[in-house]
Length: 141
Image 1 (cartoon, helix red, strand yellow):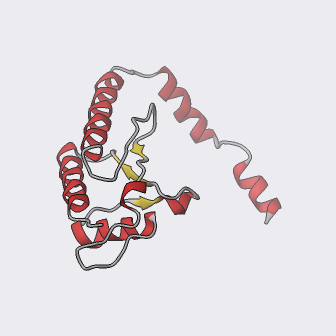
Image 2 (cartoon, rainbow, N blue to C red):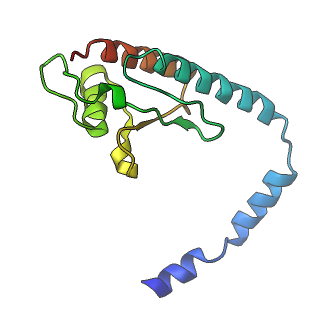
């Protein structure tokens, strides 16, 4: 397998090289607008998540996702009475309880954090953020 892998991933193909040259030398006029859109989405989701009881969302300097701490909801009880013990429990609650998909931090070896992408429509992101806030407000000690 090492021999197969070394031959299939060791060099970019000629097509990839040509695409890279075109990307580097082409029109970059669209980038400013896209950067502004992503900055707006980043700030939107950070602002919403920081309103949620038990969450703390630092503002990332890059990427297309945020990685908030959910330490403040660990140990809280869900509306059904069960207890959140980990970021995985919290992610499961968000998916089943309010229909928001996130990735639990334990998938990356970092608990109690979770990851949510902001590479989506602004309206959908705002709706998801508001659902997360409401979901956190429903948790009990």
